[in-house]
Image (cartoon, rainbow, N blue to C red):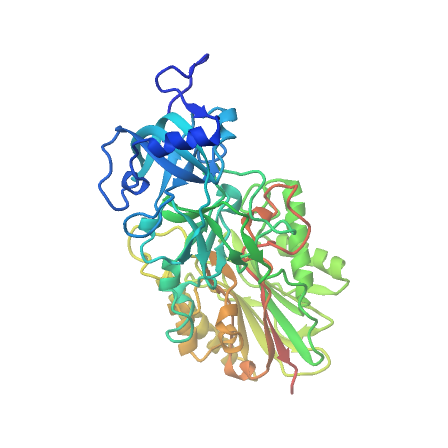
Length: 571
């Protein structure tokens, strides 16, 4: 934004100086009432043609939001006392970095001011700038304009003090620590449109179009303290905002609300405790993307030993909270001792005899999938094999097990398909399901073929559970390929659509982490669990963030939520 620098020893009589009258209310009000002014809506270009750029004008309005100084917006908003000719309020931003600290104290919401300055524009937004005089005209009452969001014509209300209705919901918190903003959507969180098969979920395009950024009255980075946090030092996706009053504006490609009153949050999505222990007669299999558990420092995981200790503590707390009998661990460093280290520590922390199901070629990728089990709860019936064909970047492990104390055997394979990142310039590009969708679909087909061949080689046709990170949402082609092969999507089968998410990306929720079962195994499902300890939590709580904020608990131990299924032991 443009502005002026104040010279040392400035005096009110100099050209361009800012004069703020603090005299009696009666005399000041008389000055304001008799002044020739340009209407706020005209300067803002909301109805009539705007004044010529750099034209010196006088404007009268009520201060609605003061965000002064470099830590704020370097200015304030004003609004006309009387409605514009169309019956709606009109608002305007006043860029005023030149105000001295004692002058800023006079710019308060509810004060009517007469401003002399120049008509200007910043990034397409009209504003008043280069202030020459600011006169205090006393107090004025101005009620927020009620707005049903998304508004039919938000451009007309830019710069206006509004009260948003209906209640909004936090759909994204990725930029909370970086810019002090939350992504809001009306009524409920936004879902990835491809998260559901057609007709099996919400119609979200209109909801996504209704996004609004709850800002913090500043465009600075790394705000300290971080705004909008609850008593636990977090702000979870899914939190409802029932009281939202502030100035509406558009900046950096998004509609934003700078609050003039503290937003009213509801704990509509509180942090969960541990999962309940499995019911007697069941075995729990859980899949957990551990987000790069690396013993090699400075690679994908921890950069320093202290970070590794924090990462390990959080992941162990998360694994303990699952009360699982078997674990599919995704994104383990592709070296033998990384999963061994984790499982040994999990056994020590829980007092349970955890073992790795090792075996098979793990490929050349930096990460791999590992299987682990409690040998007091299940026993392996086969060695662990992997499909090491080139279609798989992380060869999926596969092994058969039987519940201790009797029960039908079953098999588990852990998956981690090709991610949607590092897109090619041509070929398998993003066509609405992220790049590398063709490769993931090929991987799904190859997995089905491999499992059928493996089953046919057994004395009995063991049903297989596919568990892990598909890197595809529930309505995308890889998931459809598994469904076409007769696999049952357990999350879609057992969870209502508002609970079908394990990941939040760019303010859209969805499930990349899957439990896909052979029909014979799907008939043995006693319960399906999604453990929302990570995806709803803000990024700054992860192990490699500010050590003063990171706690040795399960929350934001990864960017994915774990999922689990309880299988009956029936014979």
